[in-house]
Amino acid sequence: MNKINSIQIIGTQRSGSNLLRLILNQFEQVSAPHPPHILKTFVPLITYYGNLEKERNFMQLVSDVADMLNSNPVSWGIEMQAADIRKACKAKNIYEILSAMYRIKARLDNADIWCCKSMHNAYYVSDMESHGIKPFYIYLYRDGRDVAASFRKAIVGPKHIYHIAHKWKSDQIKARQVLDMVGKKRFFSVKYEQLLKEPEQVLHTLSDKLNLPYSPEIMRYYNSQESINTASSGQMWENLTKPIIRDHYGMYVNELSDNDIKLFDLIARDVLKDLNYNNIHVQEHLNGTFTVKQIREFERANEEMMLKVRKNASPSDIKKRSKQEEVLRNIKARLAVD
Image (cartoon, rainbow, N blue to C red; front, side, top):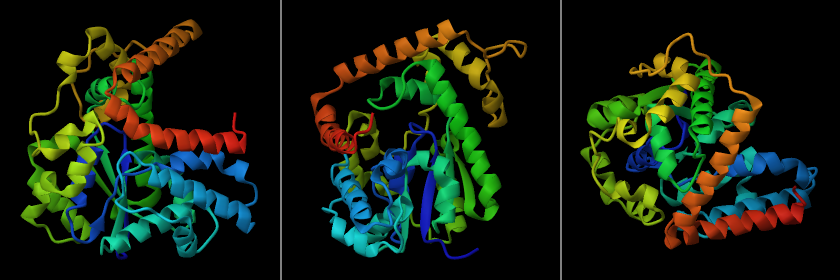
């Protein structure tokens, strides 16, 4: 295998990805800052910038990416300059911009490998690879019902089980497609529950796969400045300044209703079984199809639940996110995005 110069974490949010990111950041050779979700944000907007071979258009995109990065809820600890990102770019596309800003951060951290935790990037792997970004992929997965219970409380993401189940199922299928695309040499699966129960064993195996030296210091991630900064940036990350909670799984049994669990299982039972999650609560003969009326009701309920979570969120959480949200609103307004 060629030398690893980048790592991409894939899977679904609320699966312990920030925990894994902070652990990886403990390796001296790795720089793993909190992601500003550049591809998820800008790939859908690219056509609005026009021909990126025109320097003016490309520089506007670089400037907008820098603004999104610098307003990230968890700071990178630097004010990234658009001119520096532009200078580091070897080609004029959004994927090179992503790579350039991570390379700059890694250089400042005296690291050889940059790590991106924007898990939605799994949907852009084909374009990433064709544009020269060939990372080592770490697929982190967790029981989807625990993911659903976590999303219910988080300020981010969908809230209705119908939407969470479909997202989780789609993300796991996409991750397996990434494996088919890049092969086993650049792919490693981490089961969240196993990471909690046997962290040293999992991390020893992962460090060998990455060809990085393992150190007990890795397990003391919770004392790092990056952990402190992340935990202080939102209530949903408050556990990141604590050691691994080894029994923090199976929470959905007490946090989701029986109907919620059955609905999730109905939609995603095939993937749950493929990943060896048992205790499925629906029969095989039942199908996961719904009427247009039911789906509209799910969508209405999801919107209401998201608004409620936002309304009840702490003022500090809202404030941490408001700057980046305003930056994106201004970008879309300037581009005349619907």
